[in-house]
Structures are given as structure tokens and as C-alpha cells.
Length: 113
Ligand SMILES: [Zn+2]
Ligand SMILES: [Zn+2]
Image 1 (cartoon, rainbow, N blue to C red):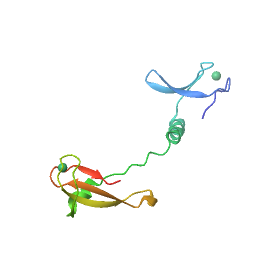
Image 2: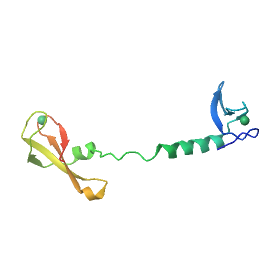
Image 3: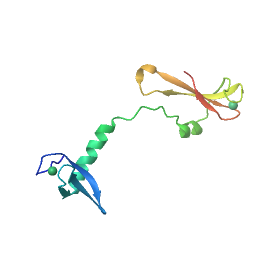
Image 4: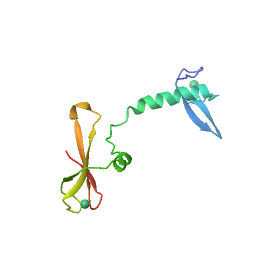
């Protein structure tokens, strides 16, 4: 963070013409935005955004490559009674394995809760 040498208030990055500058909102002081300063501001932004929400990813490619076993399961989309299934270890360990199903008929994919 950079502060105004005149009035000590926080300088904020602002686009002036084609270039970005650090501008004091209070007294109008400006200074060129160097790459070093730019990087410092970018790091701060990243921290404020926080960690991304955990998402469970269905590994489509992996599922295609492996010959999958089939099981009797009713498709929620077309009502077919046979589906491929595979299991995935969820990232939050205490949940254990999650079973995924893919309809033999229409390729609808769903997971067991
Ligand atoms: Zn100032
Ligand atoms: Zn189906």
C-alpha cells in the first residue's frame, strides 16, 4: 500500500488517459504506477477474494477411458433401469466415496447422495 506524501491518505490505482496512476482522492496528488506497486495491489486483491469453493468434479475423460461396470439404477431423466457406475473419493475425506451413475440409454449422469 502507498500513501500520499502530502496528506497521508491512501493512494488508489486509477486510469489516467492510457496509463494507470496512483491517485490521492483527498488532495489530487498523483504518481506513476510502477510494476512493483502494481504487483503489490494484485496480491492484495487475491487474498481478499479468498479460497475458491470446493467443487466435486466428475472426471469425464477418466470415465470414458475405463470400461465401466453397469448396475440396476433408474435414470432420473428417461427412466431406463441400467446405468454405468463409478466411485470417486471426495476431497473432504470424512464423506468417503461418492457413487456416480450414467444412464446406459441417454448418458444422463447423476450422483448418489
Ligand atoms: Zn493527498
Ligand atoms: Zn436415461
